[in-house]
Amino acid sequence: MKKTKALSLILAAAMTASLMTGCSSSNTASTAESSTEETTAEETTTAADSESAAEETTAADMSFDFSAGLTDAGMFDGVTALDFAVLPTYNGIEIAPEDYQVDDETLQTQIDSMMANYASPEQIKDREVADGDTVNIDYVGSVDGVEFDGGSTNGAGTSVTIGVTSYIDDFLEQLIGHQPGETFNVEVTFPDEYPQNTDLQGKDAVFVTTINYIEGDSVTPELTDAFVAENFQESTGASTVEELRTYVHDNLQKSNVYNAVITFLKENTEITEIPAAVSDFQENTLANQYKAAATQYGLDLETYLSYVAGASTIEEAVNANQESLDESAQLSLIFQAIAEDAKLTVSDDDIAAYFENLGFSDSSAMIDYYGKGFVTMSVLDQKVQDLLLDSAVLK
Image 1 (tube, rainbow, N blue to C red):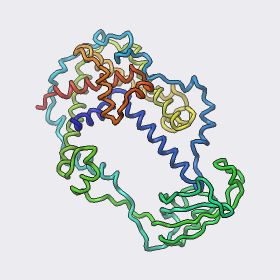
Image 2: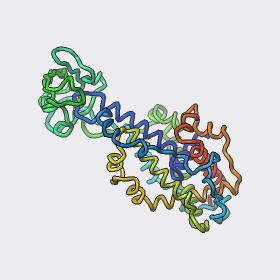
Image 3: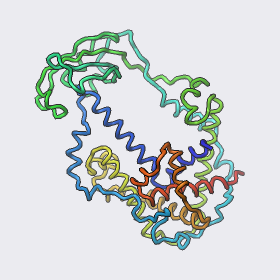
């Protein structure tokens, strides 16, 4: 059951703006923020530096409502999808072997991709540090013998590349010629203007620094039963290499089935018109995602859009994504039509179960953030997907 639901959550992202995306963005933002605050020695832009820029954006510009245009039942407000879409027979869609089978090369590529997440650099400890090396170090900084906040790695280690990473003064250049295992003083002077910590401006500092190791080429661990049990059992249920291969194969196959089903629906559904409410919702959702992410990262909207979309306004970003938005509108209309035809509904228990699968024990926070309509639509789309996948016939 967990395997099927895990796959379904992945497939859900192909249909609508997944709730997982918002959660993931939030987690990433938190990680990025903590990493910039980890050390004062590193010259990076912190969340505090971005805050002033974010304040320049008006509250109206950054307001977002994911449920705008939706009813609490997860349907487009004022739209009966069956009035605009003539559905084919969607129960028992037949899928040809070439459209769902997974070859050995594809399977291995997916497993290699999963294992790449566990790759780590070789730890070189038998030579001196040279210019251009990536080095893992720890340090504790002090001014006049007194340690200061944010001036230590706290023993967690941080990797820097000499000549690339930006640090205070000539901090990194002073690592050259030392060997892993050595502990020594690095003496620097903070710049006269140092907004990250104005108390340190223009002051001399000493960082007691330890070189842990020089990073070599990335090394991927061997895939063994023990490795699978330790790293994949909780998320996949697999405890051996063979079980993991079966899990990955089945998920890839189900993904292929889903893609084939979607292709069938697109090619065989007669759509007379895409209601404005459906198109507007897609554009609104994209705009909301950008605004929410910009807020989470502490950036003004224009700066965030320039980073992720190469645009300066929401309108430019929407225009650049118009083709995919039109496709999403078409698919959203088809899914609602199927939900109407199959008389699918969503209960509070359905919503609670959906978020429990995502790892959230309380769905109320998600409803508060995304609104009842958006949350219900996500669960309703999941029900449509389950119906389509469960009834598909593999030839």
